[in-house]
Amino acid sequence: MTNKRSAAHIFSRSSRGSAAAAAALLLLAGCSAGPDESPRASASNSPAPQVSTAPSASPSPSPAMSVSPSPSPSPASEELGEGKPLYRMNEKSFRFSPISDAEKKVVLLSFDDGPKEKEMLTSMLDTLEKHNAKAIFFVNGYRAKEKPELLTLIHERGQIIGNHSWDHIELRKKSKAEVQKQLGDVQDIVEKTIGERPRFFRPPFGAGGDVGKAVAKEEGMLYMTWSNGSLDWDLKATKKDPQLVIQQVLDQLHPGANILMHELQWTADGLDELLTKLEQKGYGFIDPATIELPKS
Ligand SMILES: [Zn+2]
Image (cartoon, rainbow, N blue to C red; front, side, top):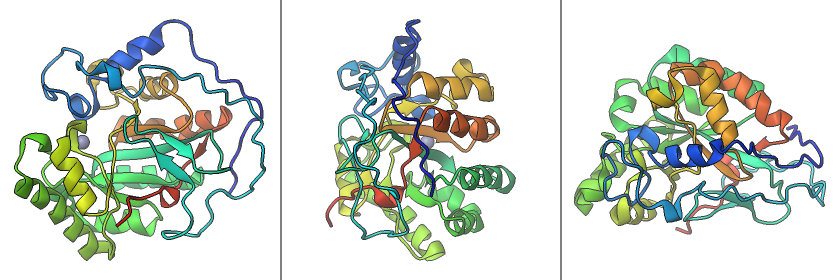
């Protein structure tokens, strides 16, 4: 595994103020609603009120110019699962940081709302493989039931399947029993199809609430929203244009970024260029198998 890093690549942000705008937009959030705990997660236009905990509200200049002190050649070997974790997620910002001497300039790639369509998915899987990158595919149960063969495809291509609830509904207002069913049924269908239960959970609209967090924990899953929204779902922001999706991700880029994307054609079309640009900036890709999981 080649983990390209450009030494002393100083973390520069565009000073055009677009970062702040992007951060504000980001709060409008994945799958067209606000991140977690927003009182009006699916409300229309008003920026989500809980800006204080906003993932990317502060660009966090992160002195990433230290030329990685220890060479530690292979950050993510094939020691899957129970190997020593290399990255820990911050439970408030959903960013990742190295546990010890793992590379700091890394991002997590993730794609929500599938599995949808074989051709598009295959293109994404090909691109990930070309870049030797791993990602989490957060799937919905109702889609998985329609096309279980696509779950198998994701798994056989070495990518990770996460749980995104059965129906893609806003969970935080639901009863615990209902949330248990929304998550548990996905766990079951994924296990039945690929033989493993997901270990990562992302609530639809970034709005799982306390109940979503609790049920995810019961299932032994790491609960996350994101820290870098590509806005690929927001047709006003990205206009189905791969270049605008790429620009969004780059504008919101930071070490340890948790990048939210979707199984969408324009995202698939821009993915190769996006990953190339991330590599050129010295970023590697977190292997989800190296993320620290909740203790079960
Ligand atoms: Zn979603």
